[in-house]
Length: 395
Image: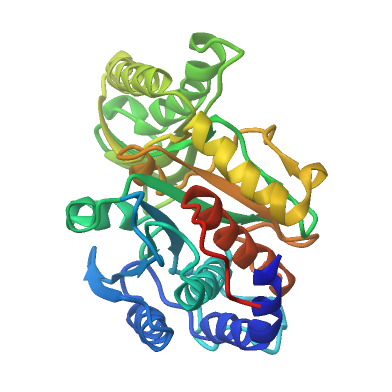
């Protein structure tokens, strides 16, 4: 492929750009430095339009092909934010910001899409328009939704969305995806149990919320095991319990926090309903009061079947048919690219990051050997989705 020559010429600077982002991680919407660097480099590359501040700190670059007979526009998306984790990689490009690190590879995602944008702006060997989308706040802040709410689709007539994420322990040079549900919905649950405080030696003078808490934690697991078709998937995890200040005092309240993950919106509805009933009635059985706050954060990430064929075709041209798969098992982690896929057809594909720590781990690091594969995938996808009779001039 001609683009491989372009990547070879610029790989060192793309790698250094990735490592610079890694040294300077930023969280959620506070990605001003990262977004500023992306916007600057897009302008230097001759991208036709660079829009900043979409969804607070998102950046969109518009690249027009050598022709526009198709009238089509596709959107390519990368995420920019890091995580509140203390890095433990020992890399020379390790985070310089205490308590923050790129533990999910968003630095690599940004570098790959930026490289592709530069190549596309130089080549223009496509018929239509490409919008490269760099979004903030994927890690819990719903930055994708913020960009849509801020008029992403009104400002840019995107007809298809595509995303790419690295996958640790998948060999570098391999790609995988699946049609339909690929990643889970992400919901937050907050439970408050109100009892009556008392001395621990006289529990009959109060209403102890601790047994209520214990019963609820157990009952929450039966929502999945005894109400859900075993062929389907869901996870209910209680991750925080807070209550009490002294060893000899029964506290008046206990709070629980956790998360629910589902691959089906009907299952999601069922879990919310059953959990609400359990909180209310189990607490009442003990004479206490239970309240559930159920916050729906990210929807299920659902790949369009035709779009999956599109990303597989691009991956196969880059890596070979034997190195692509449409049989990736669904993952119960969440991804806010789901908001974009709810608005337009599209798909996400995973690119192998090689052996190493999983994402969201202090020892995780994006593998720079992935950069040429990701750049080549993006440019190949554009060429296939927006074909032109004008030859590619990059070499």
